Length: 340
Image 1 (cartoon, rainbow, N blue to C red):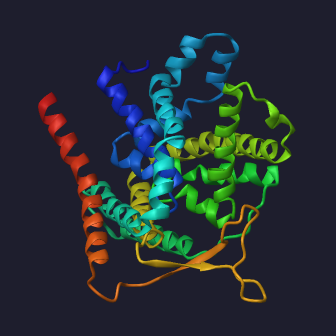
Image 2: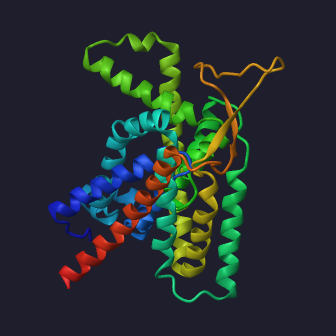
């Protein structure tokens, strides 16, 4: 049965979807971490597991209410609503902030991930050599992915479908940033910026009664790309949730140890002080993609050399990021105390 939710719980769930959607779009940040820290990760995984043969039989048989209850539809629909709204609102704000206040945004996210490591590990229990080994494996994997170099953009629909399967991992695997994986695959801008903007522009044109976009090959191709990416994401989301549900049920502490390590290893991706390494041609000119954007092939990370106002503000943002996550812990403790 689908659990009954109060109006305030429903609002909170939409807000969590907003946060998860925004996190999924930011390179280096994992929507799965949001789910983990906000306390709905396991419900999210087990709800996705319910999208199986039985649920499809219910859907095809016209038993929509049974399908909705079986798949925990109220939970998933509110969460997805928040994510969709995020892609057209909160994520747009994040795009602006990253362009104009990049150092401070990365600093805040760096602090949030530090807070997340504490939040997830505080109730882990006893660490023995086996779990420390899993932790180190997670850290090593996170660091290794952090230093991979990105590929070039590719709009082949089969490859885009594959990107959807891989890119959605950030929603189900805390610490693994789906958007960062898309950067490594070379398709971050194509899939999370250009195609989403094309869909937004299409809806805007249709609302105005303008259907001239059907003759725009570039816009139609972007819509095909978005459709292929969305289908791949759906396939990846369902398949990964079944796998994670299996390992969480049988190897919960080992899985959590790997996740904690992976999140710690991913700190290198969101390290605030870094310079972009741009792709250069034979004449040492900066190469650009089809949309005129500089092609980034990596980052040079460094420690600030002086204690300037900019550094103080960045450190303050890290502190605020940590407090943001810790405040969630305090909120849930207060909520449990009041309910008790």
